[in-house]
Amino acid sequence: MSGPGEVVVVGGGMVGAAITCALAQRGFQVRLLERQAPECGWPRGDFEIRVSAISRASKNLFANVGAWPEMVRRRVTPYERMVVWEAGGGELRFDAGELGEPELGHIIENGVVQCALWSVLRERPEVEVIAGAELLSLEPDERRPRLTVKLRGEARRLEADLVIGADGARSQLRELAGIGTSGWSYEQHALVCTVRAEEGNRSTAWQRFMPSGPLALLPLERRHFSIVWSTTPAEAARLAELENGAFDEALTRASEGRLGRLTLEGERGLFPLRLQHASRYIAPGLALVGDAAHVIHPLAGQGVNLGLMDAAELVEVLTRARERRRPLGHLQTLRRYERARKGENLAMQAAMDLLKRLFGNDVPPLKAARNLALELADRVDPLKRLLVRNAMGTWGELPPLVRAPS
Image (tube, rainbow, N blue to C red; front, side, top):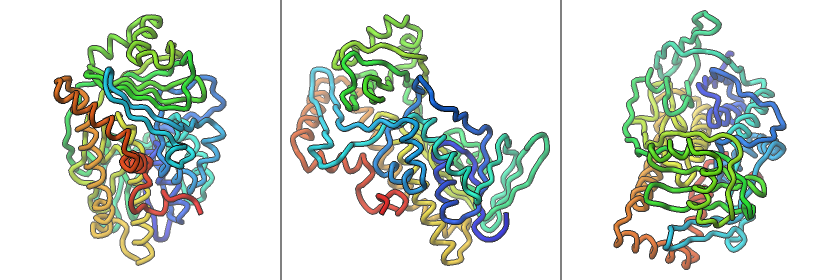
């Protein structure tokens, strides 16, 4: 590759693939490094156990880079309602129709998102995919950062105007740059699986708060849910080992039977939960996005949406820098990105951490206050609208990439 606007993206997951598509669309030359290209055979009869609740802003990004039609062709599930409740207490309901919206969001399997984005980036002449590369070293530099990778047994040196780290919570690129993290374990594991609901899913996302952690039921097509059940590691392990029938009983009981009997379909998976935040998002010639920069509790389903907003903001910053002939990797350039995203991500992390702790405490006065807050939020329409706009990612000033296509 030659000429201005050369970028190396490390990590081809949802956020890395999205930023690759967006940069290529803007005319940047992009090398995408990924250990293994995704398996994208289709159709599939079963559901993946890893799904994401995609906000309106994230849907707009997918539409703007040309990936949304492919996601729809594969499988997306819009949801029109959301119910949040606590056993024996308050309840908060959102309805898209009452709020003047066609839907509140979409539930999409992670593989569908990734494969749709890869189908776009593979068609872009500006993109070179380098699969199977192993990172060896990083030489930060504001003008030409350099990576050394091992590819097919040989060391290969890559230079660019900027390196973007989208390689996840255990980011090797972040470690090579010497960027530390802070955070803590929640001492919870998320049990994820797919279930069939006796009474269908009613196009509704459900979430019950319990002292041991929240249970989220995310609708898939008409009769299925993706389950994210956050609880103690010991309880999660016990649930994962239960016979299918006993697991169905436990899950139906935890959901208070609101959808009738819930029946397991397929495998169960366990994932440890933690809060993590990088001390810096940037270094000379380097920017971190998505889980490489921040990891959040899944109780509000905002993790990937925050990462996609990172991508949208960074693309806008880089586009403006190129127009003004400023070095892409200069710290003065990258600080604009860090300032725009770090505060918002920290605020969301703090809010989710507070919710987790508030609803994880069964002290009677606190429980009464929670129930009152849920009931109040349910009755005050302006507050409900504010909560929904924030969850949809349509509140405040947005980068062009996540605005509705014109």
